[in-house]
Image (cartoon, rainbow, N blue to C red; front, side, top):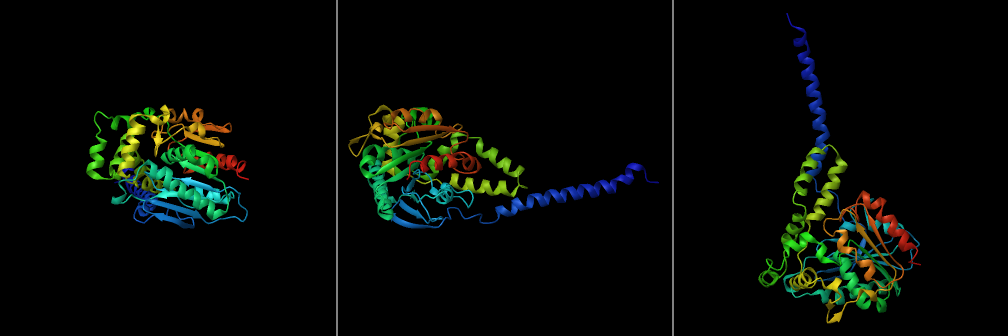
Length: 361
């Protein structure tokens, strides 16, 4: 005769099988998503205005009829691609700015060609950026524009603003997570230590600094983060939205561009080794850089938990700017979540639109 526990076995097996099937179905969506091409990033409608070597200038098509008089030029960091500003509909800073009534342009980058190894800081600050600025003004018919620089795109914007901003029609300058004290970037200082890092040999041998080398350097800032992310993805496979978001941001973070050789050599020596921007001894194209020459309205936004550009690296910036209308905001988030994703939608984007709206008429 079957005992009571024996009678329960079929029911337990059925319940276990049912629970296993539910768990499989929950995870299948996430697994299926990994087998697809994923969403198209950077898909906001745009026109290519300049396509020259590593340089790209885009003009995004308007989404509203009435726009602010002063256009915006987004300047991307030279190590990364600009689609972080334009991920997917609903998670796109470009789209947000367009819907708020701004005329939006972006200076973006492709991998430098072999023959572009001789590009220098002067090439970016006194050629690419001025060419983009002049094309924006010609395209809009306006004599003024706002420049918004992200990370090292912010450094380039500061250098250009100090040298030519006042005469070139710079109306407002905004920087995100932009370093000026490179000694505060402690992990970067470690791998770029002049006692062990032979930048001349690297550039003379390879020409351009490889993207894989830079990717490894970024990865070493938080060596356990990638493993932790992979574990979390496995744990959250049932959450399709989480998997989609992970794929988008992981793709961007892995899409690191090489850097032109001479440009890399110069930034390592002038900034990482000699910290000349903070020290007031930096020059571009033989012209001395003085950030006090920037007198237009200025906004800097730093991320409280930024592991790439710690807040200490950008802390001196506000005091170096010559403007009377200037502001620094430190927001919760990291280097990437500050500008993209849910955190940015709630914090940075509304602040940026409000600040610019008052200064773009």
